[in-house]
Image (tube, rainbow, N blue to C red; front, side, top):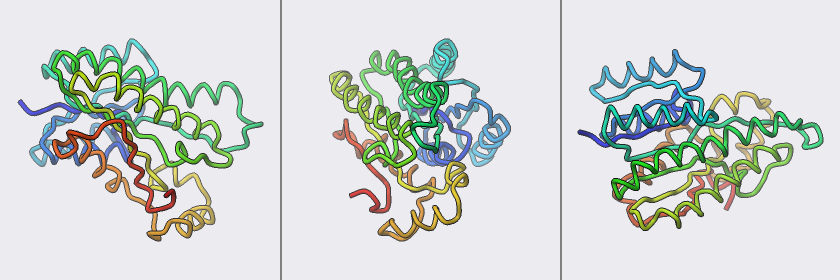
Length: 244
């Protein structure tokens, strides 16, 4: 049986590209989604039509019981969990003084608590197997911070901290934990920005373009492969040189 990868937020954008890349590399891919059922099922159908193994599964990463149910289902059906990619995330743009406690909590519940819950459940199988790969998706703003994105930047910085601490904790069990911190990438989040803001981001990027979901997916595919077997606790920031 092929190795199994669970990708949260896998129905669109970076998550969908990660699912595509891992399926191509021979993984059975669990496409986790919360609300985008049609897109998740369309991706599952597309991957299967090309001979890949994939299954869409609805799970809210903020919900402890739902996350437990996801991993119990995967372990029961496939017998193993080899890769976890924590991609599910939300953003918020605005002055910190205008951020409500509800908005702050929503961001941290999805971006940080969600990653924590997913890691905790995946590790039950990985530690027993004495092997596994975890890749957390952060952001370049988690490295350097972004004006008017204090809540989002804080949550993505927390993901980096989680990555580094967990890498030390589970390394003795043969598990690697790494982080990919994308720069400005053409996703639904980017569409919320004005044309002027997007042009400014392109001008500030030494490579002179926005990233694509596939750019990020290839970094993830590398980190979960045997080629990266001696890499753990690292942050790869695929940002076109914007943060050096």
